[in-house]
Image (cartoon, rainbow, N blue to C red; front, side):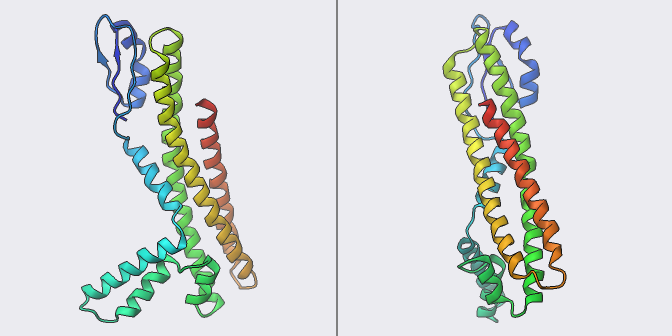
Length: 233
């Protein structure tokens, strides 16, 4: 995040730790005993959080449209051979309109194939959620530290309430992205739970259970991260 701080030399010394943590560079203006924070461009972590939150919230239909388009592009790149076959491959990869279970039943003829695809999909989601959780933690730690330091500056009369309010608005925007990611992960977990019930009689279906537990555990961790940030806003 590109922030601008203007402070006396004494104030700047007291903020060195916080500025180092947040990768901010202070701008010193002698004789002005205030700290002013303005929002600049998003940090790489914040931008990644936004992208991952959006990706986790994509609907099945959106995923199917993207996959089908990719399949068509592949066909044209190969001179138009097997056009509709490639479109269907893309649609299967993205998931078709309707529930996840419906897409499995439509595109995989037997339960064994459906189970294999479900396990593959939940593993991919687990990897996606794990990556999202990591970036959430990075953003949360920085937000909490910066809010704490800015509140201390306000209490000491070294900044104003407007600067704190502006900083809080940034934190709330990041919190909204976190909650969006959580909502998307929960929706996927529900789809996988329904698929697990459908495929319960298949040998090897227990493999989904471990993946589901892992997904639910990560969702719980995501909620804890978001709650901590919310409690500190």
